[in-house]
Image (cartoon, rainbow, N blue to C red; front, side):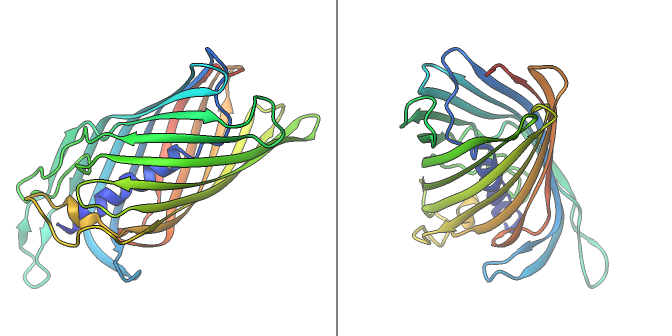
Length: 291
């Protein structure tokens, strides 16, 4: 039950980092596409009081396709699709006699897909671009798997995230570009889950004529704590209500060619409630057709 609760919070944290993409819609017919592997392995978590508690070692691995495509110069379609998700936990061992209380298990499936639409509120080329986006979280993953019902690849609820982004890009010198952006959003969750207030800021520096990009991110989620507090079904995902976090992350992207590159990132909650106390990692390859 505890592992299921924490697992849902990872999906929240992961989705937030993906969709903190800034206020710049893709140009018509242009796009950005990425295939990545994201994972986290942890043996402790933040409790509802913000303190750390141990738990059985648990791992989550997501193979994800992310894409942006410009339908017009101001409308961009976005997809975030965990096409393969694997979650597991180790044996649960008795602290008194060392016996195996419950054997370790694993489950494979697809995760929850996100579909989004971003609209440029300012005209292309604006000095301070501002955009609005709507992201729909589809319950395509599974819940309640495993003999204890604590393995899942989704949270079993349909959510709607309305977000506003603003930012600015600029040149530091002839070979160095940079940008900064920020966002706020409201995430409405169904099936008894609490509504959330999301916010974040990120900045990036493009070195060597923008061949290497170094990006830092701060993302956060605050719960309205207006959801159900008890399970209403046999699944345990309802216990993920009222989760909160403040996360710091960094990413490095390298363009091997003008359009193709590789990236690596790390992120983790520095404080939170009902969320893992361990960093997550990601590596990926991308195709940037926006240029």
